[in-house]
Length: 107
Image (spheres, rainbow, N blue to C red):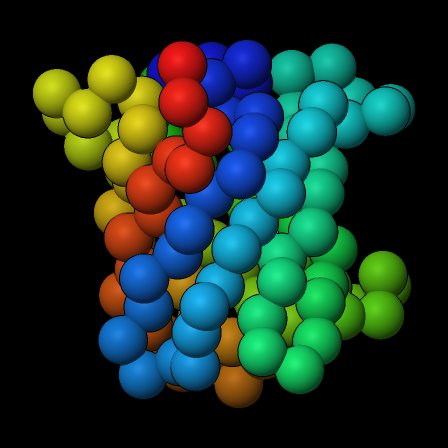
């Protein structure tokens, strides 16, 4: 999986967190190979920036655009055609929550 497969809309299933949670990712305007977008959660949205390298997703989430309010670490699910990622999200208090991201856009 590379940056082009990460671009688009993703639905996050995250037990213990209110949903729906949707991520909208686009090419980062300043850093080649990375994405920037937003995450829509019930009651608020936040900025997300990240990338995928050798099948591993790393993203930072920020409610105010300055401070990190969440970190995403995950792995592309083998055999998912780069349409599913599973991992762990940690909030600003370092509490971990498992997640599954599934691509909403059709190829």
